[in-house]
Image (tube, rainbow, N blue to C red; front, side, top):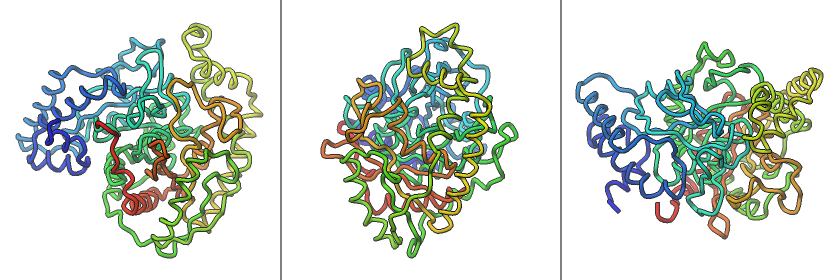
Length: 474
C-alpha cells in the first residue's frame, strides 16, 4: 500500500481542501489516491456506483489543477472527489433511485444540493448506492446490488445513504451527501463508525420536491469527523427560493470553532426513548458512555420527552407522501418493485383526508411538547439504531431483544421518532460490540441549534476517539 496515498484518503476534508488550495498537494495526486482506494475496496464493498473511468476522473483533476494555477477564486471544496447519493439528480450520471424502473434515466438538471456541491468545487466521479426509492435502512437493489459494511463484509451498511456511509468509512470519499426521512443519514453513520448530521428541517434545501411543505425529510452532510460535517454544512446550508420551507441562516457560522464549555448544561439521558426494545450490545455501549457527558461537565439526568402519537404521525405522513409520489408506478411496474415498497405505497392509498389532517394536528401538539421539554434540557441523548449492523442477507431485522417488529421500518423507531421532532440530531461513533461492529450515539438539540449539536458531538468525539478506528484493510 502506498503510504502517502493512504494518508491522503484519511486526511480530514478540511485539511485536504486547504492542502489543494495552497498547492501543497495536487488535485491529481488526491484523485489518484482515492481511485487506488476505490479500486482496492469498492469491488467487495459496492458503495460507489455509476463511476466514471479512471482516465476521465484524472482529466477532471488536471482541469481543477489548471483552474487553481490560473489564480481564479475557487470554492471551499475545490478538488475533492465526490459521489452523489443516487436519490439526487446529477447531470452526467444515471438517476436510478435504486430501481430498475429508472435504470436508464439520465437527468437534465441537478438538485439544489448537487448544484451547491459543484459550485463549491467538488469533482463528481459517480453516485453512492441506495435502497430502492430510499425505502428501508438497508442498501440493496436490483440495479447495483448490495452495499456491504467495511467493518464486516457480511453485514449491512445501513441506508438509505448506505453507499455514502460505507465509502467514507473505507476511505473512498472525503465527504458525502445524504438524505434523512426516517434515519437515512444517521443509521448508516451509526453502522459505519462515521458522523452524520440530520439538520433542522429547512436548514438545507431539499428542492426539487413534490411536497415542499409536508413531512420531515432533510438533506445533510456525512464525514469521518464532526469538524468535517460542519465544514460541508457550511456549503450546503442556506435558504433557497425553490424550497419554501427553508429559512434565513448564516452558513459560515458552521466554520466557527467547535470547542465549548459544557459545564452545567442539562442533558436528558434516554437510550431507549422510554421503552423501545434495544439490543443488549447497543445498550451496553451507550451506558458505557454516559459518564463521558458527565466528565464534560454536563448534568446528566434520566428523562424522556412525551412522544405519544409519534408512530401515527410519522407513518401516516410517510405513507401518504409515498402514495402520492410513487403510486402511479404501481400499475405499470408492480412486478419490478420490492414487496416493502409496495406495502408502504398501498398503506398510503388507504389513508383519508381526515387521517392526514389528524396526523398533522397531532404533530403540532408533539412539537410543542418537545419545545417545552427542551426548555429544561438543552440536549437529549439516545440510541441511533436499536440494533448493531445485521446480516446483509436479511431484508430487515424481524425482532429486537425478543420483540417482534410489526413492519419493515419498525426497527428504526429510535431514529424516526427523532425525525418527527424536526430537531437537529447527530450520530457520532460511540463504541463497538464484542464482535467488532460499530455503535453510534444520537445527540438531539433544540430547534435550529444545529451548531450546538455539532459542538457537543465534537466534544464527545474528542473525549472518546472511537471514530479513529478504521476497518481492517482500509
